[in-house]
Amino acid sequence: MTDQRSLDARQTREKILATASQLFSENGYENTSLSQVARHAKVSKALIFWHFDCKEKLYRSALRKTLEPYYIDVHDLGELGARERIERLIDQFYDFVHANVYSVRFFLNLITLRGERQADEGLERVNELYHAFGNSLAEIIDSGQRGGVFRPDTDARRDAALIMATLAGILVQHFMSADTSRDPKDLIDYLKFTVFQRLVIAADGGTAAGRP
Amino acid sequence: MTDQRSLDARQTREKILATASQLFSENGYENTSLSQVARHAKVSKALIFWHFDCKEKLYRSALRKTLEPYYIDVHDLGELGARERIERLIDQFYDFVHANVYSVRFFLNLITLRGERQADEGLERVNELYHAFGNSLAEIIDSGQRGGVFRPDTDARRDAALIMATLAGILVQHFMSADTSRDPKDLIDYLKFTVFQRLVIAADGGTAAGRP
DNA sequence: GTCTATATACAGATAGAC
DNA sequence: GTCTATCTGTATATAGAC
Image 1 (cartoon, rainbow over the protein chains, first blue to last red):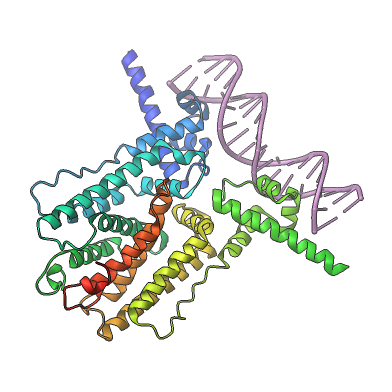
Image 2: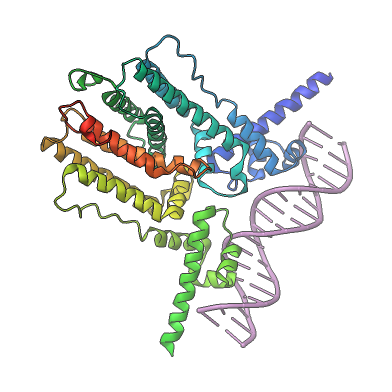
Protein backbone atom coordinates (compact mmCIF):
# COMPACT_ATOMS: atom_id res chain seq x y z
CA MET A 1 0.00 0.00 0.00
CA THR A 2 1.09 3.52 -0.68
CA ASP A 3 0.37 4.57 2.87
CA GLN A 4 2.57 1.83 4.21
CA ARG A 5 5.41 2.89 1.97
CA SER A 6 5.25 6.55 2.96
CA LEU A 7 4.98 5.55 6.59
CA ASP A 8 8.20 3.60 6.32
CA ALA A 9 9.86 6.54 4.68
CA ARG A 10 8.71 8.80 7.44
CA GLN A 11 10.08 6.42 10.03
CA THR A 12 13.43 6.31 8.26
CA ARG A 13 13.52 10.08 8.15
CA GLU A 14 12.71 10.28 11.84
CA LYS A 15 15.37 7.74 12.62
CA ILE A 16 17.98 9.81 10.83
CA LEU A 17 16.77 12.90 12.62
CA ALA A 18 16.88 11.27 16.03
CA THR A 19 20.35 9.91 15.40
CA ALA A 20 21.59 13.26 14.15
CA SER A 21 20.10 15.10 17.14
CA GLN A 22 21.86 12.80 19.52
CA LEU A 23 25.22 12.96 17.78
CA PHE A 24 25.12 16.72 17.28
CA SER A 25 24.20 17.14 20.94
CA GLU A 26 26.98 14.89 22.11
CA ASN A 27 29.78 15.99 19.84
CA GLY A 28 28.77 19.24 18.25
CA TYR A 29 28.29 20.10 14.62
CA GLU A 30 31.84 19.90 13.35
CA ASN A 31 32.65 16.71 15.20
CA THR A 32 29.75 14.86 13.71
CA SER A 33 30.20 13.50 10.20
CA LEU A 34 27.38 12.33 7.99
CA SER A 35 29.15 8.99 7.77
CA GLN A 36 28.72 8.64 11.49
CA VAL A 37 25.08 9.57 11.32
CA ALA A 38 24.56 7.13 8.46
CA ARG A 39 26.29 4.32 10.31
CA HIS A 40 24.39 4.88 13.55
CA ALA A 41 21.08 5.24 11.77
CA LYS A 42 21.92 2.23 9.61
CA VAL A 43 21.24 3.99 6.33
CA SER A 44 23.45 5.15 3.50
CA LYS A 45 24.93 8.61 3.36
CA ALA A 46 23.13 9.25 0.09
CA LEU A 47 19.79 8.74 1.78
CA ILE A 48 20.56 11.46 4.26
CA PHE A 49 21.17 13.83 1.36
CA TRP A 50 17.99 12.69 -0.33
CA HIS A 51 16.03 13.60 2.81
CA PHE A 52 17.82 16.72 3.95
CA ASP A 53 19.76 18.10 0.96
CA CYS A 54 22.87 19.04 2.93
CA LYS A 55 24.43 18.81 6.35
CA GLU A 56 23.39 22.31 7.32
CA LYS A 57 19.72 21.52 6.66
CA LEU A 58 19.97 18.26 8.56
CA TYR A 59 21.42 20.27 11.40
CA ARG A 60 18.56 22.75 11.33
CA SER A 61 15.99 19.98 11.30
CA ALA A 62 17.72 18.24 14.18
CA LEU A 63 17.79 21.52 16.04
CA ARG A 64 14.08 21.99 15.57
CA LYS A 65 13.47 18.49 16.81
CA THR A 66 15.72 19.07 19.79
CA LEU A 67 13.78 22.22 20.57
CA GLU A 68 10.39 20.52 20.61
CA PRO A 69 10.44 19.65 24.32
CA TYR A 70 11.74 23.12 25.09
CA TYR A 71 8.64 24.30 26.73
CA ILE A 72 8.06 24.91 30.38
CA ASP A 73 4.59 25.76 31.43
CA VAL A 74 5.25 28.71 33.65
CA HIS A 75 1.62 29.51 34.24
CA ASP A 76 0.10 26.36 35.62
CA LEU A 77 0.93 27.23 39.18
CA GLY A 78 -2.63 27.34 40.45
CA GLU A 79 -3.41 29.01 43.70
CA LEU A 80 -0.03 28.55 45.29
CA GLY A 81 1.70 31.23 47.29
CA ALA A 82 4.61 33.24 45.88
CA ARG A 83 7.15 31.16 47.67
CA GLU A 84 5.76 27.82 46.54
CA ARG A 85 5.52 29.08 42.99
CA ILE A 86 9.16 30.04 42.99
CA GLU A 87 10.15 26.67 44.36
CA ARG A 88 8.04 25.05 41.70
CA LEU A 89 9.72 27.06 38.95
CA ILE A 90 13.20 26.25 40.18
CA ASP A 91 12.32 22.57 40.34
CA GLN A 92 10.90 22.73 36.84
CA PHE A 93 14.15 24.21 35.61
CA TYR A 94 16.12 21.46 37.27
CA ASP A 95 13.83 18.69 36.03
CA PHE A 96 13.90 20.06 32.53
CA VAL A 97 17.66 20.25 32.40
CA HIS A 98 17.92 16.81 33.93
CA ALA A 99 15.59 15.37 31.30
CA ASN A 100 17.39 17.09 28.43
CA VAL A 101 21.05 16.97 29.33
CA TYR A 102 22.16 16.27 25.80
CA SER A 103 20.39 19.14 24.15
CA VAL A 104 21.17 21.52 26.98
CA ARG A 105 24.83 20.70 26.52
CA PHE A 106 24.26 21.26 22.84
CA PHE A 107 22.98 24.76 23.33
CA LEU A 108 25.51 25.66 25.95
CA ASN A 109 28.02 24.67 23.35
CA LEU A 110 26.37 26.80 20.67
CA ILE A 111 26.46 29.80 22.94
CA THR A 112 30.18 29.64 23.47
CA LEU A 113 31.01 29.38 19.80
CA ARG A 114 30.84 32.38 17.58
CA GLY A 115 30.08 32.29 13.90
CA GLU A 116 27.30 32.28 11.35
CA ARG A 117 25.34 29.45 12.88
CA GLN A 118 25.12 31.28 16.15
CA ALA A 119 22.45 33.73 15.10
CA ASP A 120 20.27 30.72 14.57
CA GLU A 121 16.59 30.34 15.20
CA GLY A 122 17.52 27.71 17.75
CA LEU A 123 19.34 30.09 20.02
CA GLU A 124 16.58 32.61 19.55
CA ARG A 125 14.09 30.14 20.89
CA VAL A 126 16.24 29.22 23.87
CA ASN A 127 16.81 32.87 24.64
CA GLU A 128 13.09 33.43 24.48
CA LEU A 129 12.36 30.58 26.85
CA TYR A 130 15.07 31.73 29.19
CA HIS A 131 13.65 35.22 29.30
CA ALA A 132 10.09 34.02 29.72
CA PHE A 133 11.28 32.01 32.67
CA GLY A 134 13.07 34.98 34.15
CA ASN A 135 10.06 37.21 33.65
CA SER A 136 7.80 34.74 35.42
CA LEU A 137 10.19 34.67 38.31
CA ALA A 138 10.30 38.46 38.44
CA GLU A 139 6.52 38.70 38.36
CA ILE A 140 6.11 36.25 41.20
CA ILE A 141 8.66 38.04 43.32
CA ASP A 142 6.97 41.32 42.58
CA SER A 143 3.55 40.01 43.50
CA GLY A 144 5.06 38.53 46.65
CA GLN A 145 6.38 41.95 47.54
CA ARG A 146 3.06 43.59 46.88
CA GLY A 147 1.35 40.87 48.89
CA GLY A 148 3.59 41.59 51.84
CA VAL A 149 5.21 38.16 52.09
CA PHE A 150 8.52 39.33 50.62
CA ARG A 151 10.51 42.26 51.84
CA PRO A 152 9.99 45.26 49.59
CA ASP A 153 13.53 46.59 49.55
CA THR A 154 14.91 44.36 46.79
CA ASP A 155 14.78 44.67 43.02
CA ALA A 156 12.48 41.92 41.73
CA ARG A 157 13.89 41.93 38.21
CA ARG A 158 17.44 41.72 39.42
CA ASP A 159 16.49 39.09 41.97
CA ALA A 160 15.07 37.02 39.15
CA ALA A 161 18.08 37.55 36.91
CA LEU A 162 20.35 36.50 39.74
CA ILE A 163 18.41 33.32 40.40
CA MET A 164 18.52 32.52 36.70
CA ALA A 165 22.24 33.12 36.60
CA THR A 166 22.76 30.88 39.59
CA LEU A 167 20.72 28.10 38.00
CA ALA A 168 22.74 28.40 34.80
CA GLY A 169 25.95 28.48 36.81
CA ILE A 170 25.07 25.35 38.77
CA LEU A 171 24.49 23.71 35.42
CA VAL A 172 27.90 24.73 34.11
CA GLN A 173 29.59 23.70 37.33
CA HIS A 174 27.98 20.33 36.97
CA PHE A 175 29.32 19.94 33.44
CA MET A 176 32.68 21.18 34.56
CA SER A 177 33.49 18.89 37.42
CA ALA A 178 34.31 15.52 35.95
CA ASP A 179 33.42 13.86 39.22
CA THR A 180 29.68 13.40 39.29
CA SER A 181 29.98 12.89 43.02
CA ARG A 182 28.32 16.14 43.96
CA ASP A 183 24.65 16.29 43.26
CA PRO A 184 23.56 19.59 41.74
CA LYS A 185 20.23 19.00 43.48
CA ASP A 186 21.93 19.80 46.74
CA LEU A 187 23.03 23.23 45.53
CA ILE A 188 19.61 23.84 44.04
CA ASP A 189 18.07 23.21 47.44
CA TYR A 190 20.55 25.52 49.06
CA LEU A 191 19.75 28.14 46.46
CA LYS A 192 16.10 27.99 47.46
CA PHE A 193 17.09 28.27 51.09
CA THR A 194 19.20 31.36 50.52
CA VAL A 195 16.66 33.02 48.27
CA PHE A 196 13.96 32.78 50.87
CA GLN A 197 16.28 33.52 53.73
CA ARG A 198 16.88 36.77 51.98
CA LEU A 199 13.45 37.55 50.55
CA VAL A 200 11.02 36.37 53.17
CA ILE A 201 10.02 38.78 55.86
CA ALA A 202 10.48 37.10 59.19
CA ALA A 203 10.34 38.46 62.72
CA ASP A 204 13.04 36.16 64.04
CA GLY A 205 15.70 37.43 61.72
CA GLY A 206 15.39 34.92 58.95
CA THR A 207 15.78 31.45 60.38
CA ALA A 208 12.11 30.88 59.64
CA ALA A 209 13.10 30.92 55.99
CA GLY A 210 13.07 27.17 55.95
CA ARG A 211 16.28 25.53 56.99
CA PRO A 212 17.80 24.95 60.42
CA MET B 1 74.70 36.09 14.53
CA THR B 2 73.36 32.85 15.87
CA ASP B 3 71.54 34.66 18.64
CA GLN B 4 69.77 36.86 16.15
CA ARG B 5 68.69 33.86 14.13
CA SER B 6 67.29 31.95 17.08
CA LEU B 7 65.57 35.08 18.31
CA ASP B 8 63.78 35.41 14.99
CA ALA B 9 62.77 31.80 15.17
CA ARG B 10 61.43 32.27 18.65
CA GLN B 11 59.41 35.24 17.50
CA THR B 12 57.97 33.27 14.62
CA ARG B 13 57.07 30.47 16.98
CA GLU B 14 55.41 32.91 19.33
CA LYS B 15 53.52 34.45 16.47
CA ILE B 16 52.12 31.10 15.45
CA LEU B 17 51.23 30.36 19.05
CA ALA B 18 49.49 33.70 19.52
CA THR B 19 47.55 33.28 16.29
CA ALA B 20 46.55 29.74 17.18
CA SER B 21 45.43 30.75 20.66
CA GLN B 22 43.23 33.43 19.26
CA LEU B 23 41.68 31.27 16.54
CA PHE B 24 41.14 28.30 18.85
CA SER B 25 39.54 30.60 21.38
CA GLU B 26 37.26 32.18 18.83
CA ASN B 27 36.25 29.16 16.82
CA GLY B 28 37.18 26.10 18.80
CA TYR B 29 39.52 23.29 17.94
CA GLU B 30 37.62 21.63 15.11
CA ASN B 31 36.68 24.88 13.43
CA THR B 32 40.24 26.03 13.21
CA SER B 33 42.36 24.62 10.40
CA LEU B 34 46.11 24.80 10.24
CA SER B 35 45.73 26.54 6.90
CA GLN B 36 43.88 29.31 8.68
CA VAL B 37 46.52 29.56 11.35
CA ALA B 38 49.23 29.59 8.70
CA ARG B 39 47.49 32.30 6.71
CA HIS B 40 46.82 34.53 9.71
CA ALA B 41 50.33 34.07 11.07
CA LYS B 42 51.75 34.58 7.58
CA VAL B 43 53.80 31.41 7.60
CA SER B 44 53.54 28.14 5.73
CA LYS B 45 51.67 25.16 7.07
CA ALA B 46 54.88 23.14 7.00
CA LEU B 47 56.50 25.54 9.43
CA ILE B 48 53.75 24.95 11.93
CA PHE B 49 54.48 21.24 11.75
CA TRP B 50 58.18 21.88 12.10
CA HIS B 51 57.56 23.80 15.31
CA PHE B 52 54.74 21.80 16.83
CA ASP B 53 54.74 18.34 15.19
CA CYS B 54 50.97 18.06 14.90
CA LYS B 55 47.77 19.97 15.43
CA GLU B 56 47.12 18.39 18.81
CA LYS B 57 50.48 19.55 20.14
CA LEU B 58 49.95 23.02 18.76
CA TYR B 59 46.65 23.01 20.57
CA ARG B 60 48.25 21.96 23.83
CA SER B 61 50.90 24.65 23.52
CA ALA B 62 48.27 27.24 22.75
CA LEU B 63 46.30 26.04 25.73
CA ARG B 64 49.32 26.43 27.99
CA LYS B 65 49.90 29.90 26.65
CA THR B 66 46.27 30.77 27.19
CA LEU B 67 46.53 29.49 30.73
CA GLU B 68 49.50 31.63 31.64
CA PRO B 69 47.48 34.57 32.90
CA TYR B 70 45.17 32.17 34.73
CA TYR B 71 46.25 33.12 38.14
CA ILE B 72 44.36 35.10 40.69
CA ASP B 73 46.17 36.01 43.83
CA VAL B 74 43.60 35.06 46.41
CA HIS B 75 45.82 35.77 49.37
CA ASP B 76 46.92 39.32 48.99
CA LEU B 77 43.94 40.70 50.80
CA GLY B 78 45.85 42.33 53.61
CA GLU B 79 44.07 43.32 56.76
CA LEU B 80 40.66 43.82 55.22
CA GLY B 81 37.47 42.66 56.87
CA ALA B 82 35.58 39.59 55.69
CA ARG B 83 33.12 41.62 53.73
CA GLU B 84 35.71 43.68 51.91
CA ARG B 85 37.72 40.58 51.09
CA ILE B 86 34.69 38.95 49.52
CA GLU B 87 33.98 42.04 47.48
CA ARG B 88 37.59 42.09 46.38
CA LEU B 89 37.44 38.45 45.30
CA ILE B 90 34.27 38.95 43.30
CA ASP B 91 35.76 41.97 41.60
CA GLN B 92 38.91 40.02 40.81
CA PHE B 93 36.81 37.33 39.19
CA TYR B 94 35.00 39.89 37.08
CA ASP B 95 38.17 41.71 36.10
CA PHE B 96 39.88 38.51 35.20
CA VAL B 97 37.05 37.33 32.99
CA HIS B 98 36.79 40.74 31.42
CA ALA B 99 40.49 40.74 30.61
CA ASN B 100 40.42 37.22 29.17
CA VAL B 101 37.12 36.94 27.34
CA TYR B 102 38.55 34.91 24.50
CA SER B 103 40.17 32.24 26.56
CA VAL B 104 37.29 32.08 29.01
CA ARG B 105 35.00 31.44 26.08
CA PHE B 106 37.49 28.86 24.96
CA PHE B 107 37.28 26.94 28.21
CA LEU B 108 33.57 27.27 28.55
CA ASN B 109 33.49 25.69 25.14
CA LEU B 110 35.80 22.88 26.19
CA ILE B 111 33.61 22.11 29.15
CA THR B 112 30.50 21.60 27.08
CA LEU B 113 32.11 19.26 24.58
CA ARG B 114 32.80 15.71 25.50
CA GLY B 115 35.61 13.63 24.14
CA GLU B 116 39.22 12.66 24.63
CA ARG B 117 40.55 16.18 24.75
CA GLN B 118 38.29 17.01 27.64
CA ALA B 119 40.33 15.25 30.30
CA ASP B 120 43.03 17.71 29.41
CA GLU B 121 45.57 19.34 31.65
CA GLY B 122 44.03 22.64 30.65
CA LEU B 123 40.68 21.87 32.17
CA GLU B 124 42.42 20.44 35.19
CA ARG B 125 44.15 23.74 35.72
CA VAL B 126 40.96 25.73 35.35
CA ASN B 127 39.16 23.41 37.70
CA GLU B 128 41.96 23.84 40.19
CA LEU B 129 41.80 27.61 39.99
CA TYR B 130 38.04 27.55 40.27
CA HIS B 131 38.19 25.41 43.38
CA ALA B 132 40.95 27.47 44.94
CA PHE B 133 38.79 30.50 44.41
CA GLY B 134 35.80 28.77 45.96
CA ASN B 135 37.81 27.61 48.92
CA SER B 136 39.08 31.11 49.59
CA LEU B 137 35.55 32.35 49.52
CA ALA B 138 34.42 29.64 51.91
CA GLU B 139 37.28 30.36 54.29
CA ILE B 140 36.50 34.04 54.39
CA ILE B 141 32.83 33.42 55.04
CA ASP B 142 33.72 30.96 57.74
CA SER B 143 36.08 33.38 59.43
CA GLY B 144 33.43 36.06 59.14
CA GLN B 145 31.03 33.79 60.95
CA ARG B 146 33.53 33.00 63.66
CA GLY B 147 34.31 36.67 63.97
CA GLY B 148 30.65 37.44 64.51
CA VAL B 149 30.14 39.71 61.52
CA PHE B 150 28.23 37.07 59.51
CA ARG B 151 25.25 35.19 60.77
CA PRO B 152 26.23 31.67 61.86
CA ASP B 153 23.22 29.78 60.54
CA THR B 154 24.42 29.34 56.95
CA ASP B 155 26.72 26.79 55.38
CA ALA B 156 29.92 28.59 54.39
CA ARG B 157 30.99 26.01 51.82
CA ARG B 158 27.61 26.02 50.16
CA ASP B 159 27.46 29.80 50.31
CA ALA B 160 30.76 29.91 48.47
CA ALA B 161 29.68 27.33 45.90
CA LEU B 162 26.53 29.31 45.26
CA ILE B 163 28.41 32.56 44.76
CA MET B 164 30.75 30.80 42.35
CA ALA B 165 27.83 29.35 40.44
CA THR B 166 26.22 32.75 40.19
CA LEU B 167 29.42 34.30 38.88
CA ALA B 168 29.73 31.55 36.29
CA GLY B 169 26.07 31.96 35.40
CA ILE B 170 26.36 35.70 34.91
CA LEU B 171 29.21 34.94 32.57
CA VAL B 172 27.15 32.49 30.53
CA GLN B 173 24.20 34.85 30.44
CA HIS B 174 26.49 37.50 29.09
CA PHE B 175 27.68 35.20 26.30
CA MET B 176 24.13 34.14 25.64
CA SER B 177 22.40 37.43 25.11
CA ALA B 178 23.53 38.76 21.78
CA ASP B 179 22.63 42.26 22.87
CA THR B 180 25.50 43.61 24.87
CA SER B 181 23.15 46.21 26.24
CA ARG B 182 23.03 44.85 29.76
CA ASP B 183 26.22 45.26 31.66
CA PRO B 184 27.16 42.18 33.66
CA LYS B 185 28.80 44.54 36.12
CA ASP B 186 25.32 45.58 37.23
CA LEU B 187 24.37 42.03 38.13
CA ILE B 188 27.71 41.52 39.83
CA ASP B 189 26.99 44.50 42.04
CA TYR B 190 23.55 43.22 42.82
CA LEU B 191 25.06 39.84 43.66
CA LYS B 192 27.27 41.52 46.24
CA PHE B 193 24.25 43.34 47.60
CA THR B 194 22.22 40.17 48.02
CA VAL B 195 25.07 38.18 49.48
CA PHE B 196 25.61 40.69 52.23
CA GLN B 197 21.94 41.34 52.72
CA ARG B 198 21.73 37.68 53.55
CA LEU B 199 24.98 37.09 55.40
CA VAL B 200 25.54 40.22 57.40
CA ILE B 201 24.09 40.39 60.86
CA ALA B 202 22.13 43.58 61.19
CA ALA B 203 19.76 44.73 63.89
CA ASP B 204 17.52 46.61 61.50
CA GLY B 205 16.61 43.58 59.48
CA GLY B 206 19.15 43.76 56.74
CA THR B 207 18.88 47.12 55.05
CA ALA B 208 22.23 47.98 56.58
CA ALA B 209 23.68 45.47 54.16
CA GLY B 210 24.66 48.24 51.86
CA ARG B 211 22.03 49.29 49.39
CA PRO B 212 18.88 51.38 49.76
C1' DG C 1 13.14 5.73 -1.36
C1' DT C 2 17.27 3.43 -0.97
C1' DC C 3 21.44 1.81 -2.50
C1' DT C 4 26.70 1.61 -4.52
C1' DA C 5 30.07 4.08 -6.72
C1' DT C 6 32.21 8.26 -7.61
C1' DA C 7 33.43 13.30 -7.86
C1' DT C 8 35.42 17.08 -5.49
C1' DA C 9 37.44 19.70 -1.86
C1' DC C 10 40.15 20.34 1.90
C1' DA C 11 42.02 18.69 6.12
C1' DG C 12 46.43 17.08 8.52
C1' DA C 13 50.85 15.62 7.56
C1' DT C 14 55.48 14.60 4.84
C1' DA C 15 59.55 15.25 1.46
C1' DG C 16 63.00 17.68 0.13
C1' DA C 17 65.08 22.13 -1.80
C1' DC C 18 67.16 26.24 -0.03
C1' DG D 1 64.13 27.61 9.93
C1' DT D 2 61.33 28.30 6.18
C1' DC D 3 59.51 27.33 1.93
C1' DT D 4 56.86 24.76 -2.27
C1' DA D 5 55.03 20.66 -3.78
C1' DT D 6 52.80 16.58 -2.70
C1' DC D 7 50.75 12.52 -0.27
C1' DT D 8 46.82 10.51 2.06
C1' DG D 9 42.70 10.31 4.35
C1' DT D 10 38.10 11.69 4.98
C1' DA D 11 34.42 15.03 4.55
C1' DT D 12 30.37 16.75 1.89
C1' DA D 13 27.94 16.01 -2.02
C1' DT D 14 26.38 13.85 -6.72
C1' DA D 15 25.20 10.19 -10.41
C1' DG D 16 22.75 6.72 -11.58
C1' DA D 17 21.10 1.73 -10.90
C1' DC D 18 17.31 -0.67 -8.66
